Length: 448
Image (cartoon, rainbow, N blue to C red; front, side, top):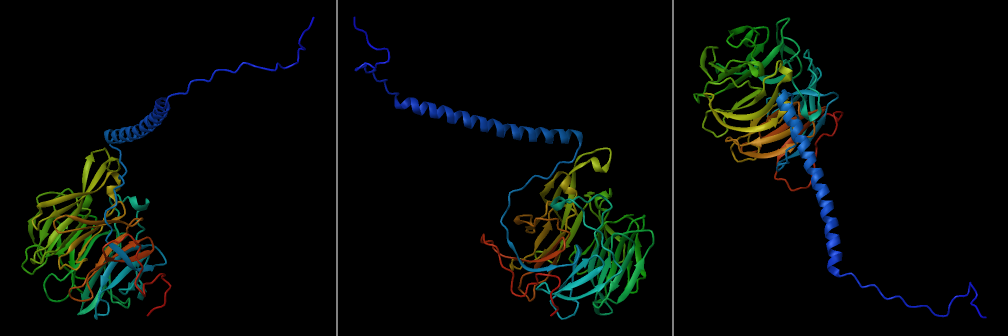
């Protein structure tokens, strides 16, 4: 009897039949289903994110809560940095004046209590200590918030006894002081227990000397001072004026004074002649945050722009309201001619600076505005946006120096933190621009 050992492997085994191959279309079907599932999941996630954002905005609008300003796509940047100065402390205000009466105008920077004089290349050519203490800028980065009562310091060029001078005022007290370029005090007008809410300097009577227009709170209205500090006239029609602009809106070669109550003012802006008599009134109470007037098209009549808030919800207190902020064009009689949105929500409560000049050399002026979201924008007379350029930080002040020669280009200056930047108009090439030779990189540079 024969038997195979239990551990012995047989010499032959049956060969299994091969499995049929899967068709190619099945592989593509599986890959398509996987890709479809991935795309569907991503789409659901994106849709859920935007739905959540929309619900939060809806809840904020229903409750009257402020909403953050949305990010705006960058437009063509048309300014490049050509000068830079770094001050020892934050710069609260900028001005311009031909301090040596030789042209071109210099730039003035108020840093804490020092007025620093810069030449066109951004180099320090003089400085002096003042009695004016500048208020700190609003906090909050580029979306800085300024509630009613905030007032930035002012620097204005003046002419006193035929010589250049600098008028300065702080939003912290009721003092207005006029200095010569060496820092000697020429005039002081102070009202204890009040704050300066507006400052404008202009030659209202054509005698070559500057009159100083001072708005104060505490129901004091607007005062017009002569070169000795004596009051020429007062206007109490706007008890607490926050907006004062001198411009020739009639085109008769004489300056009018435009006075508004600012953001908290409920009455329309009024128009005064050079003697303080009311000669007009704008039809609408805009609640101007900023106002500017200049002749941009050469017809000898000033055009006007204003940064105004649009109330979205009326809460029980000022802090509970939400605002949009718009830039509007106005005729000399206060008729709105165009409007463009600057920002939405609570960021619209930031301070905004306005200036004008011929930046591109076409012999027509442009409006320049620092948006509440930290951007610098240029507009034509008719409100066409030419460019939008992010500065990355809250812009505390804006000023424009005129061209060095006839037919040249104006230069814009902005203050961001402790830096003062000189900006020229250029067509953007996509490459960072290099400052011109001689541009100051530090506030400790040697004087020329």
